[in-house]
Length: 121
Image (cartoon, rainbow, N blue to C red; front, side, top):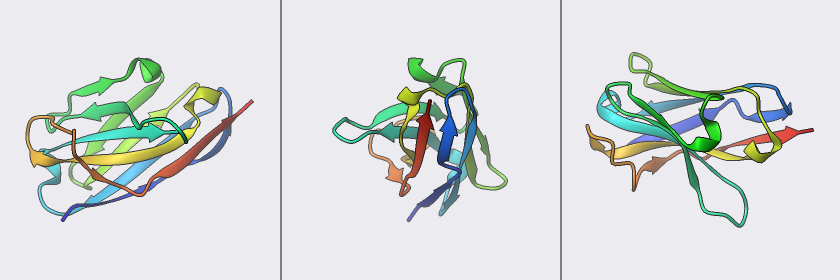
């Protein structure tokens, strides 16, 4: 079983930065595609960014140029650096790990419990 624990959320003024972290336990971390998702009440969960086992990153348009996803396979950790935050970035952010090894099918991932990000102006 894969378990994920996020940290680093909080409240920040618009234009500020936050760094989210996720520590993953369980088999095969380095071979799993990882991602960050977010959700606001009443809306579907949406992809923020993904990173495959080779370190190739992909971003939703909403975060391009502002967010950076990274992984440290030696520490089984995943990070999301968020800069120039906007009120529209306010959401619960979830760390996700693919159920499959290699590739980047993250359609039915293992989920963390979420960490709240609130951006105020």
